Length: 195
Image: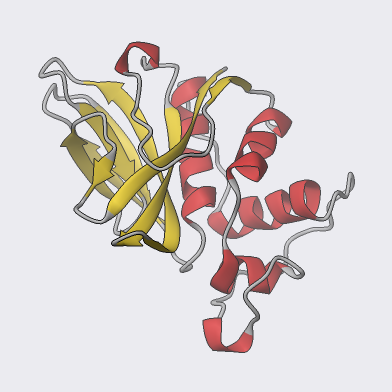
């Protein structure tokens, strides 16, 4: 995993995780939000966190075997479902309910979970240095959904804009509360968390 240090317009430094797998944006967002809520950096690599999340949340196992050595997953070698670890992180991705459960498994509190609807917006008043949100975006062409992506709404800057941590390339962006993200992204579901 690659961690970038990015400063927002208020000169607050954020750790932004650049995802390595096509469908690991949820894992990167969990890591970033968890670190912010705890106000510390948790030493857990992308592969280990993805392995633990899949086995505890998706497969429902209590005792999780040790993760195999990190590797790259080829989307062409995996199906588009969650039946295996490889399928989930090479192609399919993660549901918001699974992200919320992974957050709870880490001892954090989900203070609010919005309904799934295209057109949600971030409530900047709910954000603080220890209370970020994880946002599920849908990518749309017209009314057709063509995939999803997770980002973190970290804080509200003094400018009034929301600081977003985007694991696609490890970017920090300051934008409005939604519901549009980078042209064809739509805010669909949001969870707010605290330690």
